[in-house]
Length: 116
Image 1 (spheres, rainbow, N blue to C red):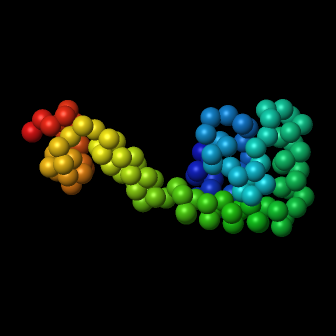
Image 2: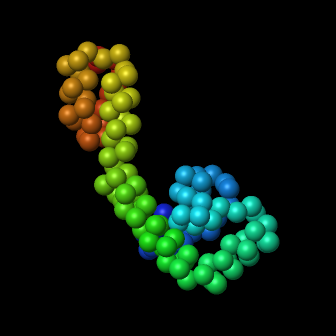
């Protein structure tokens, strides 16, 4: 199960410091980031098993973080912002830029400067 799927289900998270994990897990808030050792992993699991209040707090935080950052609409909005910024940075005429921004969902656009 991916971390984002776990967040969607309201689960506390446990993962190592690799890839995008530190972007998803807020240490001590919605889960634990641990080194890749048996001792670190077991220590974090024991904390979650023995402390239902911590588990509940992290579960709620995971769901809140998911809903404010990782829903399909939030992700689509973030992607659209990146594309809009890229289009604004291209050397295009204002007319061409506006047309591209309005029609960017077509999927088959020529982004070469001022080709129409």
